[in-house]
Length: 140
Image (cartoon, rainbow, N blue to C red):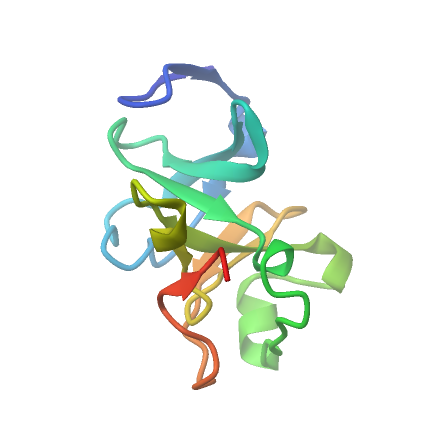
C-alpha cells in the first residue's frame, strides 16, 4: 500500500504494519491507525504517521537514546490492554518537538508512546514522575 504524506513523500507499507491506537493519540483522538517509518538521513528518528490523515505525522525517538536510565513500569491493566506478554514485544518512543536551533529540540519524557510491535497496538501514556519533563532538551 502507498501513503502519500504531506511532508514525507510517498511511503510504502503493508496492512499488517498498521499500529492501532484504540484511544487515538492526545490531540488526535479521532485518528486510530498509524504507521512507523525511519526518517531518511537520520535513522535515530522515526515518523509515527496517520494513515487516515496525510498531514499528521509525529517525529519520534527512543527515549533511551537521550536518557540512558529512563524507566517506568506498566501496570497489569495496561499490559492487558496492549496485549503485552513480554518486554521484547514493546517499543517505547517519545515525541520530538523540533526547533531551528539544535539546543531547542526537545522530547516528551512525561508521555511516552508504548507500542506492542507483535500485536500492532499502541497507546500514549502519562507518567506520574516529576523528573520526566514534557520538554526535555535532547542536547545538554
